[in-house]
Length: 333
Image 1 (tube, one colour):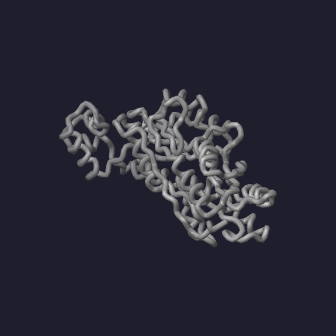
Image 2 (cartoon, rainbow, N blue to C red; image 1 turned 60 degrees about the vertical axis):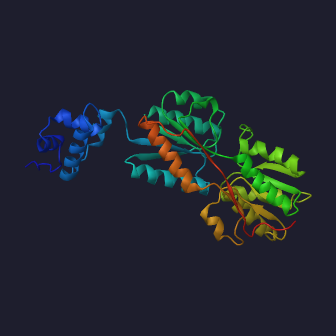
Image 3 (spheres, rainbow, N blue to C red; image 1 turned 90 degrees about the horizontal axis):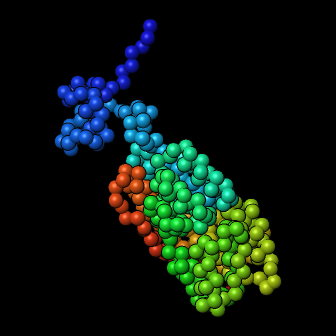
């Protein structure tokens, strides 16, 4: 015997409202009907427990309900938290995140961006490894793209939640300079193939202004690899008196390397991070870091993306100002 489905259908909603099935369909999609009719249909649908079938809804609207979230590296704890936050906020807006990890590889990032486009996601949120790649302008013609952190090449993104990196770098370096540090190692995840990321560029100009000697070193965000790079930086001659890391995850590697070398933080070397992951306050000593308001970043990126998908005018460019969280990992040189 075939079991009859108890699922409420669009015909049930039509019967309850005295409208045709097509009129109900239009009203639920917010087209070709008055606001009064749309409200009446939505109220009836809620009372009956009607839920549009995902496939039928996608076919009717031309949207999949999926938003691509392309992370530069999910070995970075801050990006993990960012991805979780965006996925949850999208879900609260009846959309779903398809999260992919570029693994710190700019070429892989671009390949994954093309795949997300080909899978017909409704939009793409990216924290770019290579913001200058020409592909971003091409993608902007095909789907809404919202960047986090840095603006994308070509100005074709539908929205930008960018960080005032000049201010962030200035806060960190002026803080270390004020403590008497003049020899600073800077650990960044930026690859040699993508040298024009704003934060890295500002390090050199700010160091020159403050009279600092900086050694910029590429460090992965995975703990073991970051520890190895930090070990090398901390055994250089002359040894830096401070390390500024463009990721709290990299700073955790500096802590591990300092412990291996018997160096005290901050007695022998001061350490400063750059994204204020919640775990950083729990370290011994707690990590001084630059805070970019991750909750505000999540909310702004999702709001801009949903507005772009729905064709609603939104503020296109949102600039986040940093705050220095001064803790016990930095002290006098």
